[in-house]
Amino acid sequence: MAKIKSVFICQECGSEFPKWMGRCTDCGAWNSMVEEVRGKPKSRRPGPPGLFYQAQAPQAIGEVPGDVALRFPTGSGEFDRVLGGGIVPGSLVLLGGDPGIGKSTILLQFASYFAAQHGTVLYTSGEESPGQLKLRGTRLDALEERLLVMGETDLSLIIEEINRLRPALVIIDSIQTVYHPEITSAPGSVGQVRECAARLMGPAKFLGIPIVIVGHVTKEGSLAGPRVLEHMVDVVLYLEGDRHHIYRILRGVKNRFGSTNEIGIFEMLEKGLQEVANPSRLFLSQRPTGAAGSVVIATLEGTRPLLVEVQGLVSPTSFGLPRRSATGIDYNRLVMLLAVLEKRAGLNLSSQDAYVNAVGGVRLDDPAADLGIAMAIASSFRGVPCPDDTIVMGEVGLTGEVRAVARLEQRLKEAAKLGFERCLLPRGNLESLTFKPTLKLVPVRTVGEALQML
Image 1 (cartoon, rainbow, N blue to C red):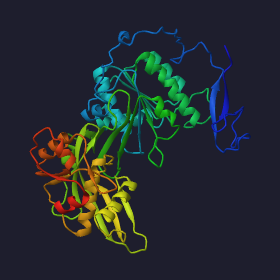
Image 2: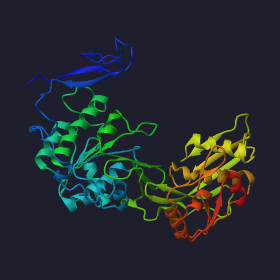
Image 3: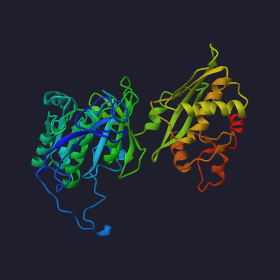
Image 4: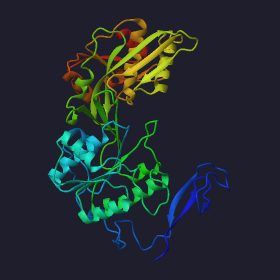
């Protein structure tokens, strides 16, 4: 058997070195060294230790064994929605989020339900002791007998327990605290995170065990560690929200087994995270009536229509350079809409501070929110409130035109369910209408027409 050793490779030029150095002597790049393991047995395929696999012969895709539609429910309708209907056997799921947002809470609830319904669950934590996990499990009423907890950070020992127990589910909390003894770098380094994720793919793919790993996030909100980690896993989820508020949003950004960009809404209560059945009603529950700068828009998150309140505030600037602030909305999109309102609608916003907020902690990526954002800004600037029974949707172009939106029927049904009576929408949608809506439709072609209608 070949001797196993580690080498350090410069990511910039590919040069190899026997030990880590802060600066590459060949290309001069700083902090570019990544550790890799060399000398592994070439006859070994990735999988659990002690198990070797023969090369598989090609076969017709229709003859591949296994039920690709098999999914295990998580006990939460919102969690299942984001996963695409449940967790798939043999899948590798990565869950990220800010510290204290509720990642361990939702996973412990999921693990307890899974253990009660499907079999043994192995929950390994490198950040909390088994005693701390029991305290949380007592509070969440998650003391299921088949839920096994383990305070371990050595990945080789964790994989040994996986091979011995053959559990129905494995949870690793978190990947940054786990290390493999063959890698000499510290836990959480690029080499450790990449190698540990690769070793976990063996039990997941060859034994059909779904594995959920928790990942830390950076100050910018992205997953810490190498970007390749997101490419290796099957599903990437983010748990978003403010620790000072009770609402959490579980967002799917990658899913090999279902739709991406789905979201699930949860409420943090004493008994853990509870799903919210009607998020649109939740987002509009405290909406002020007759307030200038408040507009309700109909947006889509994956396949789910949501009604969200957008608030705009415009006030004269005290300095030479006006301030722009966007919460839950892309900043560059806000700047573009301000320029369109000034150039195409004649609003003098160059001397005004502008603030826009998507209420409820929602992040709006749907282009159909453009017209609602523009109307909220114009409403605050003119001091004229928009009608409370009206929703707004439409994509705004640089020439001031209002473009059609997708899945109009779903948006209108959600608005009618919550009691709205009018809808300001692009004229292009009205021309291709194939159903009879219950709302009064007000079509517009430009931003200027929309301002006159409202």
